[in-house]
Image: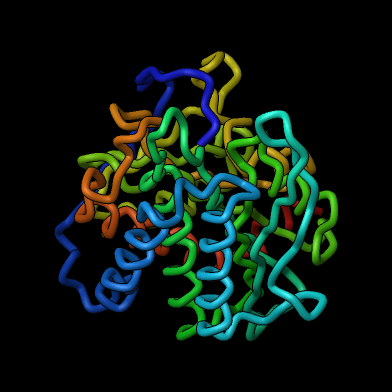
Length: 314
């Protein structure tokens, strides 16, 4: 996550309290990510061997190869006969190459409209001899993206879904900017962007930004409130919050800049944010799984009623 400020803000947030009473409901149980695989993916991506996944580094390449293998194993289709989409980026004053890993699932009913799920897989690399593994930021979002891809590979969506693990977010949203500047499908066919960035390090609160700019998306979050096991908070997306406005803080920003509606899911800054202590051992795995199940619920709601979003896009 590329945030300007480390400060808690609850003002202007609308609380949608999760209700765990329906947790045993059969429908809820069916709408769940593969927690074991997701946690294994997160553990690998935040391992010391990847050296903090700095864009252009050996660790970044190892992460990219892992993602490419996982995407292929899930059966994601490729654009232009490759899962890898390359772009130029400047990182720490040096020219480098960023690589997005992009695959898609074709929708069963309306394949010409797309939901784009994004998460950045890069982080800060090695600084002063310390490895910044970025378990929450953003191995968590990347592993969550793969968990969503796995779910929809087994439960074919009605609309097409693109899963983009983007690079160089920490260098100025490089991967998402490259995506929207050279999109694999027409931007006019992208109904909504769902961005995951820091979704594993909290006790019970997950923020959802974007409904200030796109109020018609609020109902999709509200529909999940009956079974979400985390507390969802709408906020961090209005200009009166100053630096606590996350509208331009992560990979949803380039989509928003092109007029594409977005929902961004993320936790508040925490004690390990952008520190070497952002390790796998410091995430809250129970919260993480529950948060991703809530996000899955919202994506399912979007897929079920995407025509209402499309109507707003025209």
